[in-house]
Image 1 (cartoon, helix red, strand yellow):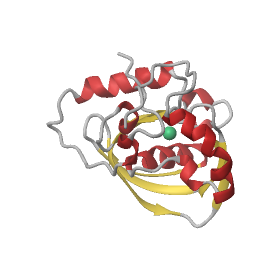
Image 2 (tube, rainbow, N blue to C red):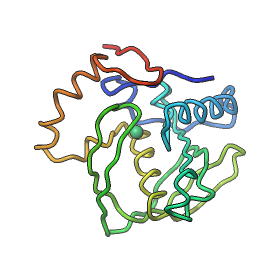
Image 3 (cartoon, rainbow, N blue to C red):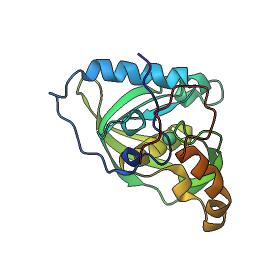
Amino acid sequence: MILPVTLYGDPVLRKVTPDIDKDYPNLDALIENMFETMYHAEGVGLAAPQVGLNIRLFVADATVLADEDPQLKDFKKAVINPQIIERNDELESMEEGCLSIPGIREDVSRPTKIRIQYYDENWNFHDETYDGFAARVIQHEYDHLDGKMFVDHCSMLRKRFLKGKLTNIAKGKIRVPYQVRPPRK
Ligand code: NI
């Protein structure tokens, strides 16, 4: 089932998410729906707040980019209760977009390598290190779980340029080729 995507300005996108436990209701169906929603919107990652849920979960699938980056061949995962426990000092800038901020793409500088601990959809624990595009996708989605969005990383000047566009998104004055949740106060 395709879920409506929350847009910039929705308060759920600004909350720090709490962990979930194994009793969380219908988790398998939720994860399946989040993948379906992400594929439908042609995204490579989707965090629970983007479907209106204040919980510590995201899905990602960048296997479509495996031709350019062989490391992404198996990069499809549900990530539950993640903690990034290490980030390297080296930064790299790359253009990012977000299904909750349609029509805006900006360069974002992030650490090139991270170490993350999380549980998968079968509640198996993982302790893994990522670099390249996978590290970028993880950090972008992880930000969502801490109430942050990629435009927060932009310079004051860029933010000023983007202000009008962001206001329009928050007011729902934008055409989006996938289902979105109407803006809330
Ligand atoms: Ni995003």
